[in-house]
Image (cartoon, rainbow, N blue to C red; front, side, top):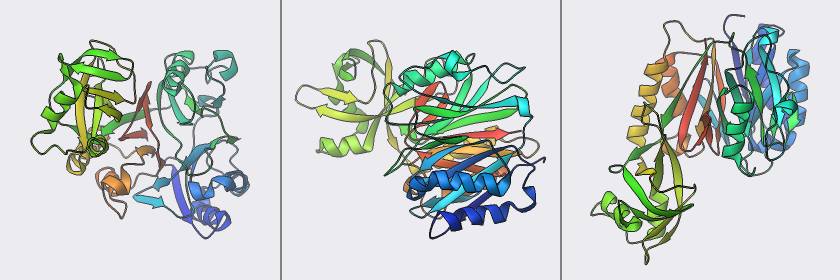
Amino acid sequence: MDRFVHASGTGDDWRTAVDACIRRIGPAEGAANLGFVYVTDLLAGDLPSVLDRLKAGTGIEHWVGTVGMGICGTAAEFYDVPAISVLLCRFPEESFRIFSAAGTDVEADALGAPPSPHQTPFGIVHGDPRATGLAELIDSLSRCMGNAFLVGGLTSSRDRFLSVADTVVEKPLSGVFFSDSVAVATRLTQGCSPLGQRHLVTHCDENLIYALDNTPATEVLRQDIGPEVPDDWHQIARLVFAGLPVKGSDTGDYLVRNIVGVDARHGVLAIADVVAPGDSLIFCTRDARTAREDLVRMLTDIRQPRPARGAVYFSCIARGRSQFGPDSVELGIIRDVLGDVPLAGFFGNGEISHTRLYGYTGVLTLFL
């Protein structure tokens, strides 16, 4: 099984959707030993039944995945319909291990040993956005597993926040670790573009920013937006975001955080993260054109001389049809640049790359 196999299915209910996947898998049945499964949130309550039927229909015991308000497959996006996307893979049996982590901290003893006999450099993680201290939990997970590089996304759902780790679980983190015998390439693409220059946080208290460059924070924001700044601060907060540059990054990455409150009278901004004096901040906005350009840049950078065996893609629910337009434009761009690589993934409440929790981004991993 050189290349992996992708199948997607829709229907009036979970049975017709999963049976459509199994039919499309066809002769690959029995050749794989790990499956990724993503279901739209209309099927969240049926996920245990979906998993049981996939195991029976494919003979694969090991599965990971989660629920999304949108899911994706090769050149296809699915929203607001019962839909399933699966990717069947073949790896050496000793090269991967399924895990799930409960509680407010991650302990190495609870996770077990890394896949033997290699070090664990890479993990694919699905997270519950309701978990307390999730960013710290992701960092702790990486450190417990030998500073593993993590990619993944946070479940998005209007109902139940479930994931798959051989069985259906409802835990802060779950997924699969791979040993260094599994070759991958991974990259991140931003969905926002900077409005102005970087600013220095000069006065703050946790998530409250009083001054940037020794100037009231709201005044700096108005200056960066320019002469057409709206009068309504609620509208500004919907259009503009706070970007926190990643320290030490050589690619200009930044973590996008929402502006969650404004005190215009005192010049204070509240953002959805904690900052400290001396940190950098750049205001940014969502821009369909630059998001498309950055996606193409990322795909060109990650493209390999030989086609990848398969791929997983984790994109923000605010991207996809909301930013790129209908008719699966975002996934179509991936296919146009990389070809028909078997791919599965979902649109989530946040994206994981390395040890950091991003927003408004796309994280692509190729299995080489």
